[in-house]
Length: 243
Image 1 (cartoon, rainbow, N blue to C red):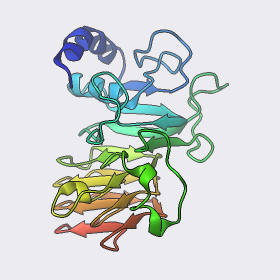
Image 2 (cartoon, rainbow, N blue to C red):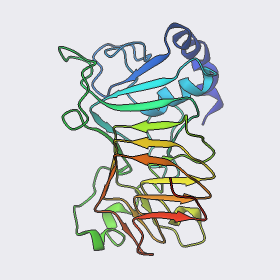
Image 3 (cartoon, rainbow, N blue to C red):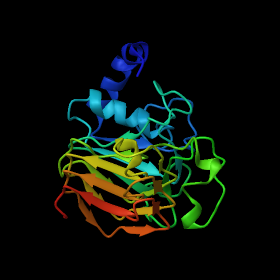
Image 4 (cartoon, rainbow, N blue to C red):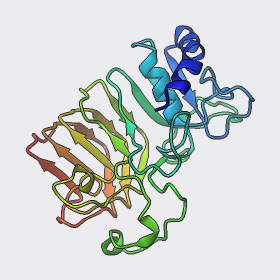
């Protein structure tokens, strides 16, 4: 993250944190100012909302997201095409997807199937649909995020709710952590994950959809479909307790 971005944005973000405990993310926000203060003034990228929540020091406890596709390498301070970029969960903050958002009659209407919020590791937007067994070798996925979402170092107050996680490709070789958890990687963290769908994620070693090392996340009402791992585990616990 570039220091210049943090310095220039700090007063702006703190002002919004003081006004509301909820900030908004909507890829289709219509207003010219994207400060997260309302649906039509929403941040365009999830990473910007996460920076705001970090700087707010606990004043922001919820990030509401409208339908759309959001990528880890997008937003202030991010480098386009950076495979290391990931959506790092934050203690005390809930990321909640599935809202109608700006332009809807009721922007706060929530239906995670109708208003799908997609967290995608397909950084180049060029993924080719293939059979699950071929995900790891598919060349169009070579530039995808190693981990779309990361819950490392968090506790149960860090929550992901109502999102689709897809396109992660942890393609490095074991014992590199980037060989684990294409969709979500948790190391010594125990976040809460609810009502989420993990699909078309892959990992060279284990946990194509999600991998947990020394972690005990609370995973409920989630689906894992079409994920692939070279180690044969689409959902893996390595030295962790199931939860």
